[in-house]
Amino acid sequence: MDRRYSDTIGVDSSHESTDAVKSAKALAQATGAIVAVSGAVDIITDGKRVVGAHNGVAMLQRITATGCSVTALIAAFIAVDQSRALEATAAALSVFGIASEIGMNMANGPATLRMHLIDSLHGLDEDAVTSRVKITGFCDEK
Image (cartoon, rainbow, N blue to C red; front, side, top):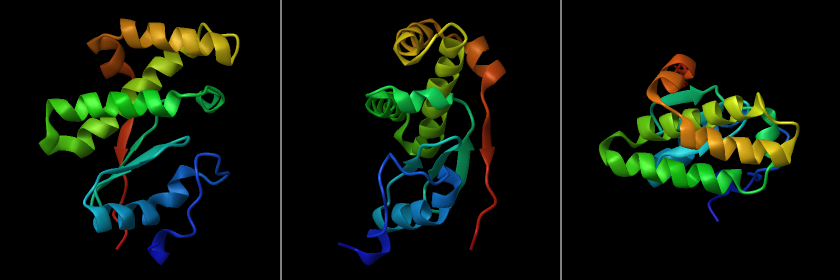
């Protein structure tokens, strides 16, 4: 195993996603892949550029398979234009987060959030997304 990544931990990490920017950039540079780190702020990098998607609710952590679901959404977004994979990944994470915010307005807990998340994803329209999207750039660290 490459020693640069041997100290990583998985989805149950207690660290903030912003703490992972340096490691995410190194992984993206080493692999040529887009790397996304989910958290209160979802971090997305291609190894040079770093953006953050600030949409979502904390209760998503309590719902099994949301990571798999958002990964499928990311793949669908990238399939539209592979040359803009960083932007597509950030957009997909933001859209999923927006749907969770809308769903959370109707939810009483994780089980009802799951149901309302799916309904919200189904019912999203351009206005709902453009009025709520929160994607920002991060200063590039050398």
